[in-house]
Length: 439
Ligand code: PLP
Image (tube, rainbow, N blue to C red; front, side, top):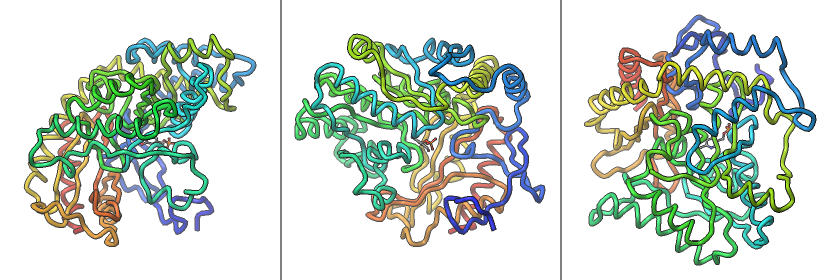
């Protein structure tokens, strides 16, 4: 019996012992196709020789130096690399160890910025229902998955939620996709006005919704309207690209496809591709200028900030992605994956929607395709699909629907950027078998 406090205390997981490219291998020698990159993490696959070499080289020089004494070459080079490719206006990086920490840093820097500017009443955050931003108390406070929040609700910061941009379930028959997007974006303005603009610090959203809805990209025009509303009311825009960023959707940042830039952005997962725990916050020059003219410091630091080994590894990951033009592969093989998913599930009675971008796809499972009726959450269909997929040698990332029926069970796919057409074919074939076996 494992003494690790796993997600499920019952444990019962196979033991992973090695990884080769898109495959993970357990202690019985069984091979699993990593169709979800774990949780959209392993974008370079496993055991990449160039990343192993970069890690060895760095560990031979310096593993760790505390940032209250030193900066380090890997941290400086990673920051330079990220800022050179960042959305417009982002000029500084805070390097931490996870996605939750990156989100937490965004929330606190947003608050700190308004204190520095002499607007201390701006303390409220607005986010979206059915979103996920991490597990720390701040990140959970803006998260919109009510089931995760429930046991901790008395501990949470004040958070306000508006609708997600989720056309499959919420678009009305009498509106176009664009009209739908503007309608839900305008909920932000209504909420800001209700709370009083002088009290609102920031709006937080995943550019492409990941785990909670199963990969839901925004509709055209949605984020442009969101950006306009934030600007009109002096509210900061925080984009959470922990899951959807760093190339996952075919561009380095998912927001590039929306034609907007945030004031603060959280990245993680694909940044270090799972070789090391690493996350980062990117902040705008306007925010940094206010801090510089104010107290001159952001009072938020951690022991492992800018960890040299983690930074050298993440830099190597990003350099390999660029050197091997892997985002072109994501766009090419992503289109192939989309075709294969739509062929296999486009008319499946229990698949209501197939959606995504690049190497980031989701299918939503429904009891009845025509009425979009979700399965009863008590059936835990998502867990059955996961179990069936593992039996078929496939890793996918499923999640249950909401109790109120506003979202069905879904399965998220996030294959490594190195996957070729044959791997995508195997992935879809095994997923089809798993879904049919589970229902
Ligand atoms: N934000 C998003 C969008 C995520 O998907 C996740 C993790 O799945 C997080 C934040 C939290 O990241 P971590 O689990 O590394 O703390």
